[in-house]
Length: 140
Ligand code: DAT
Ligand code: MG
Image 1 (cartoon, rainbow, N blue to C red):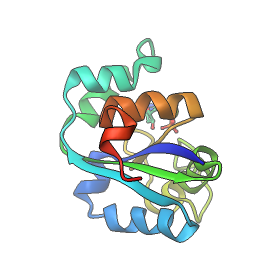
Image 2 (tube, protein in one colour; image 1 turned 45 degrees about the vertical axis):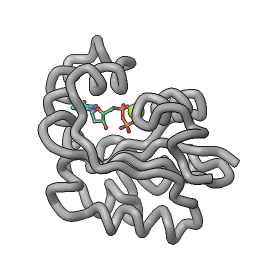
Image 3 (spheres, rainbow, N blue to C red; image 1 turned 90 degrees about the vertical axis):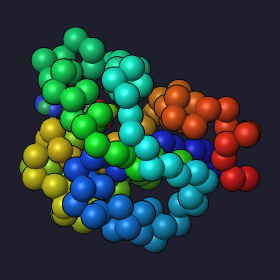
């Protein structure tokens, strides 16, 4: 079994799409293992998005993700990382297929509603960043 880190970004919480997004993961058959409504500070945002530090949109990305609360989750299932990425859709909502979260519900790359880990290694890192040690903070 694999776990992945999923986060509804401030635009998704603000638009009241948390339930819609959770439903899609539940309907797919993934299992919810942890969830937190939280405000991200700049330090956590910069660590989470560290791979993008040198990109021109980095400042805007950190401003965006810290502007209001997010809903952070851990989902589990066989190939959970890849399954979740396929449910989320491509980064740019203009390229995301209809039927995906971004394809159905978003229209701007900066406010694309949801984050999903891009590899098993990223998932382990991100889950620890947001939930601490797996064994003590997640449902088994
Ligand atoms: P993803 O969220 O699909 O893993 P990513 O890791 O490449 O995409 O980028 C992280 C986030 O940064 C993305 O969800 C939205 C923002 N972003 C990416 N490319 C951007 C761009 N060209 N302009 C503005 N924001 C961008
Ligand atoms: Mg990414």
